[in-house]
Image (cartoon, rainbow, N blue to C red; front, side):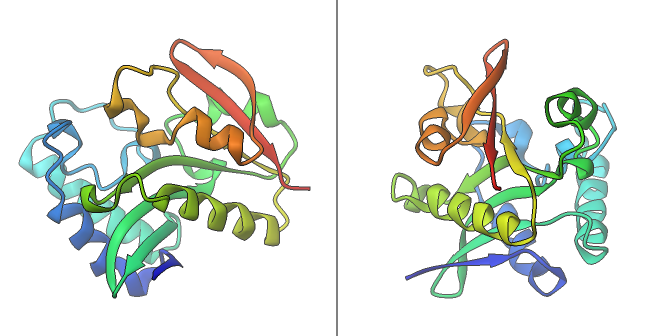
Length: 188
């Protein structure tokens, strides 16, 4: 039975352990991100061991300070999935680009999904998204943004969630930049 829990300081070790046990063979540059990329403003590439360690420390501090959040999917007390979802203002790298689409509204953004390879194609991402939609609706948010890739060839680009999944959940495309659909779902 899959259970969805909000990331909070009590779940830091679960979160870090999940990220560290994954292989990332399909995208080795993601190892050490800890889903920090969109929350940060640094443009240092390639990531060195020191930078990866700093990402981990920054993520832990941001979770402790309740700046970074999202949702963890558990099965039998083990994390099997993660969804980075939070208030748009916490995504420093892209918020200025997205704010014109939702000016004057209180909006959350879902940006990254990571599902254990053994649990893919079993609806884990959809369960995480359903939970996030309900969570932000209950908090009184006006809507949620999403940025799925429109590139059907590259599975690596689907870490933002699939276009089909968002359409199925009531999102509508409001713009497109290169191979990324900018999608919005009203919560009111």
